[in-house]
Image 1 (tube, rainbow, N blue to C red):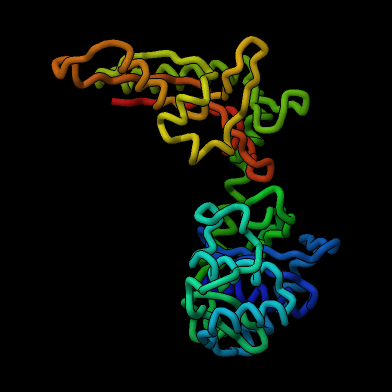
Image 2 (cartoon, rainbow, N blue to C red):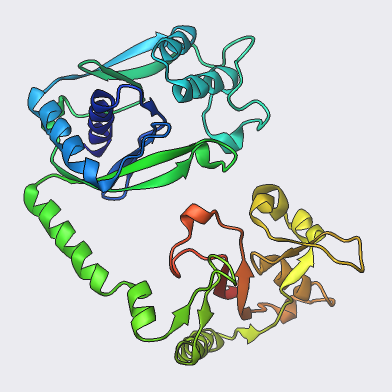
Length: 342
């Protein structure tokens, strides 16, 4: 149902803005979104009413969702004819590598024309009326078989999550099987706003952010620090009850540690790099604690009689999160973690 509504929303957007270039439109918790490139044209909340009205028309048309298979080269030709470059890029990746998952592809080949033998013979499409999309499905029987929906917000999103790519507009909606379920969900959101930690943090004088310090780098006031300290004592006591002992590790480390642990290849792009004036070593701010704890364990000979050894550490870790993903204390660049390892 929610996936079908993503297609219905894309259909409505194309009817209203025929020049729109479409990215991807997956299901998310309680709803769906679609990434859209409209060039200089920006969708705002003021446009939601007309998009929803167009979606309502499409739902009333009760057009069947029809599945078809196309040879990969024919699919690429379709994307070119439809002037949908993002779909063409995905299809070229499918032809070249059999996948569209960016992290599984050669970064230098992303978006390039696929040469040679195809890794997939054909691809799946779904159509509803005059709208066709690259899609594995499944979908409801027809556009009239979806439940209640509401468009919620629009946000910026880099194509394929890469800040070097074009920034698209991500249009979000929620959907439920019945009007009452949608109403209950929207009521819950309104109640949650009253308890939003960002609002409470300001009203209760618990933490602040500063542009001079940087995005995603919270600072805690005296009142907030008391709360943090109490949470730390409580968390530590729970773990110490089970035999965990406190350790401490530095906040910067050599890159070599993460190369040894295997984290560098997976998370190297998410680390803060630190340059020293005294050493040629490549240093980073630690994003996690497990490799450090293994080094404490390896610091002296161990016997099986020593086991199990349990370490706990409440410390700050650092990750270079994308700016568009930062939000309050939910997603930050400096986070306090109550970490434990056995």
